[in-house]
Image 1 (cartoon, rainbow, N blue to C red):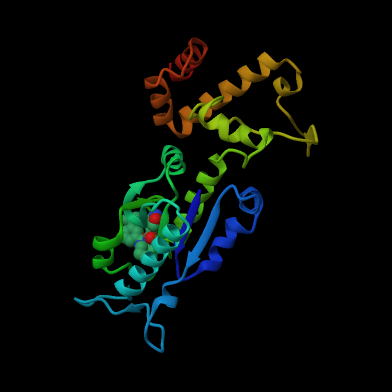
Image 2: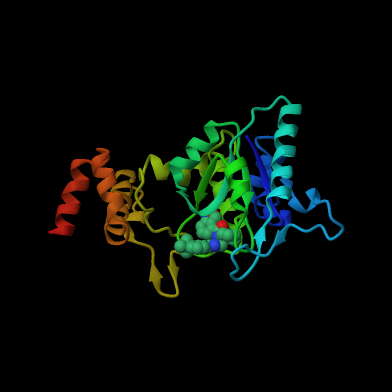
Length: 253
Ligand SMILES: CC(C)(C)c1cccc(C(=O)NCC2(NC(=O)c3cccc4nocc34)CCCCC2)c1
């Protein structure tokens, strides 16, 4: 899987290229990354990438030409290497909401070209001419598209075969397999008594069925309390068994 980022701040991507499982996967060649700075595609001596908004208003807008020139260079680079084109994605608050299923869809494709906005946004003519999809991380104000691109890329790379070992993929699988879309149960590790607080007795029992039941119950309780819509989704998908429903009935009364 290849990711390209069009960004004024390529160093931000060290967050995943330089640390942890995503960094190791990069060095193992399980995925690849290239950052392209629009500033390298300017023609003026000041390397201007932004300008004031027509119609007035605060802040600056990223100009279309450097962005488009960068995108065309990425596409030419992929073509030169015989790699598939890949969609141009604008990270944007108006985009479709990214989630785990989006990550699964993204890794099925050739790899996205991620355009990261700064200032007040990008010239609409660039969007009309070059952008295939807009995706959003959520409804909050961010300083730049890079800060949404990073978690999306992380979610995708973790899904690639060979990136996570069996231990690490437990969390990944649990989202879709053990917990199937429910919140995770509480975690505990040594010491057994921490400042007088003990680990729940079920987890010390050594009885795997009892431990699994305790964890499932905790996930259902927590999900019902914090994200009830995930319970509904699991019910619609037929992912709740009789014991689950019995517990939920007791909780919901
Ligand atoms: C109603 C709402 C969502 C609060 C909102 C409304 C208006 C503006 C913003 C905002 O944050 N503008 C700044 C800007 N944000 C983003 O790029 C961005 C934000 C959130 C999720 C994202 N996912 O990808 C990219 C995302 C970065 C600088 C270039 C212009 C876009 C937010």
